[in-house]
Amino acid sequence: MEIVAYGVQADERPVIEPAFAAAFGGEHTLRCLDLFLNRDTVPTAAGYEIVLTGANDELDGTALHRLAAGGTRFLAQRSTGYNNIDLDAARDAGLAVARVSHYSPYSVAEFAWALALAVNRRLVRAATRSREFDFRLDGLMGRDFHGRTAGILGTGKIGEVFARIAHGFGMRLLGSDVVENRNCLALGMEYVGTDRLFAESDLISLHAPLLPETHHTVDAAALAAMKDDAILVNSSRGGLVDTDALIETLRAGRLGGVGLDVYEEEAGLFHHDRSMEVMPDDRLARLITFGNVLVTSHQAYFTADAVGQITEATLGNVRDWLAGRTGENFLLPPAGSG
Image 1 (cartoon, rainbow, N blue to C red):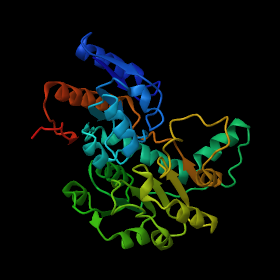
Image 2: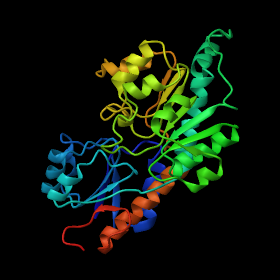
Image 3: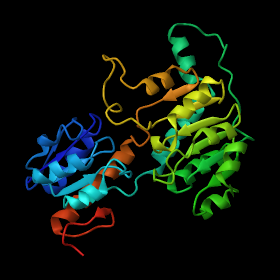
């Protein structure tokens, strides 16, 4: 059987292709495409029983029913998040769906800190100037994180690692989550409501999943409650932040900096080369013009360690499907299974 994988990055191929070849030999082969899967590209998946998808594929009801009509039976999502998949439509179409429930939390937490540090110390501006042999310090002043307050929204595995790094910086820790993490409590974290977290934090980092109840958690009211010089970092899901409200806040001259690895309308933009085109998304274009905003391309997870773990978990999900098993990563079991 040939399996097809969509949205495979150039740096990902040397990891995923040998892993599948070693696991299945010639019995099952993998075809990697840099194409992203959506209702328009679905015809390319015709005849493939197993399709490997990514977070930036757009799997709405139309796409999913077309996949099923073309012979697809199993979707193996190569990420933890799956808000890009309409699970109700997948169920109706008779598709089984699995994801990667976890991988290296260090990859995302460390990248969130990279964003925080880069924004705080104006590293992009400094590097750009240095390339032009401009070594002035004007506009490059940052602040010590030591002694300040880190507010962490979502204290699961990734949030915990972020908190450990913040603790190493000597920061006061505030957390908000539906369940308190005892390891974070041991670091001295105080759990508070989001209102207090936004109001008291000098650095706010988002590590919550995107659910109906977390959509636009950072809205106009939340932004208004933040300190004028607060730094906001989002390496989780773009929909946690109300982009319009963020733009208005930045236009008013508030916030010390913003680091975004995700964007609520990133599908069709992130992981593509748009450098030769007019940017179709006015809000993203506006965000990038602010000197204290750093936008990256949903790359926080993208380390050799994490991609290797994602590949192994995906392989496990494919093995489970081929063996007729329902593993722990399955969001929708095969039709007719228990």
